[in-house]
Figure 1 (cartoon, rainbow, N blue to C red):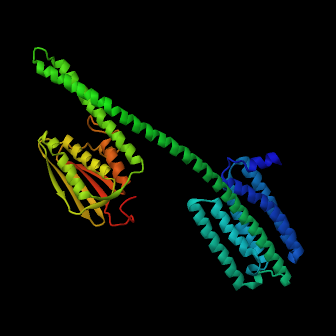
Figure 2 (cartoon, rainbow, N blue to C red; figure 1 turned 135 degrees about the vertical axis):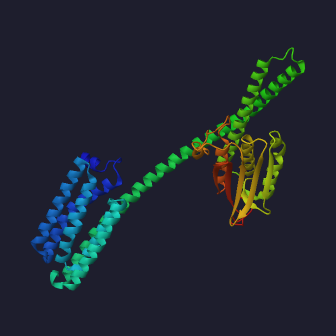
Length: 425
């Protein structure tokens, strides 16, 4: 019996399988018990034989499903043979809707909801409800089809017996279900705690590593530039073109690595709980545009702005400013001797921002993946747009990109209208 119980209720079994096994065992007990009760309660030998057949069927389905593993077939056989055949027979043999079989109809619907899933469950439940309703209406229209107990005592015993069996069955289902749910919830809580700890360790590692790398990179960059300056001052007799090329390449890679380190620091900042405040987004955009004017001039680019007044958001000003700067710098990288346009206007309950250029554009193959981490169409780090997407979405906004003649990146951010209950969180 112990080995049998372990096989029927093994912890690795699905909830529906365990529930099926419980109800199969309950069906064996209930079949015999109700057959005896109904026979004693003037129900005749038919009810005893029917109850015994149900008990035998429950035992057969238990063996079939345990050996073959075809539990869904067993569920459907149970629903068809017990709910659509045996229950209606008992309904008409035990006083119709005056008896206790109405509670068994309710049990049938709930059992189906637990055991089946998806579209099949909805279809079968709908059929059951229509079928059971039709039985009650038929019993009302044709009372001669119903066998009534000769005394009120018979109805009382029938109703009490049915109520007890259905109550025990439904409470068993719920106890098992809630027990498994609580067990799974505890396991999920433990796993979440481990994941939070691991994520914190990863974030701390990235933040510390990025922070520690900034100083050596700065020193190396300064030294390389110093060497290049010394060679320039020595004149053509000493300056070697190959050496200058190697130093220039080294400086380029150092700057790329420095940008990557900066992006890593920003990403770790996003992953942490940052302080958000009510911020003047108009001033933020204008400040970012002013900051990049000299940079843009190096490639002959100019920046046109259309920034609405009194644009207010609720967010981290440093991250939002970095996002606008990244988008303008991206446009600058792919544009030369042309105009880059920055537009920020209010559109209902949102602020719409666009950064557009007439540059080289993005290839159609790359366009669907531009916001993925590590994806770049140049010698960039492939982190910039990924970072922008992370910042925008962390502020409840959306970002998308269009590439036709040039590129336009769009951002929407929710307007702050006091909906967060204060100026800080």
